[in-house]
Length: 120
Image (cartoon, rainbow, N blue to C red):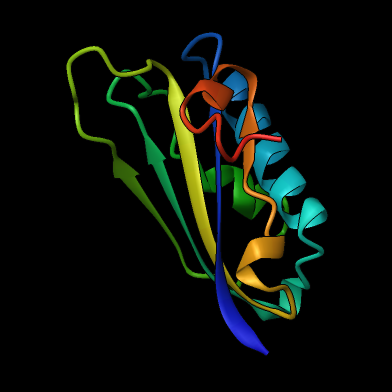
């Protein structure tokens, strides 16, 4: 089985703790489901947030989903002028039988505009 990287992003409506956690959980759950990721095969998950999101660490959503034994890290995205606001990005690494071409990268809400070539 190979180690694969799965990407996703979601744009939030506003910076509020419960909205951030709910949106992050929605994205992460969809990424895991769409790619049939076995939780036992999860290696690590990184979360990034644009600098305008300050209400909570996105990784808290993963902990609330029960991912207590998976290494998690949060980062702040570069503050590039004109970039899309209020975006959470996730990259997770997991063991998977999928080929790279079979991976479903998940872009929700306004974040679909980040990678229209990958958004489904």
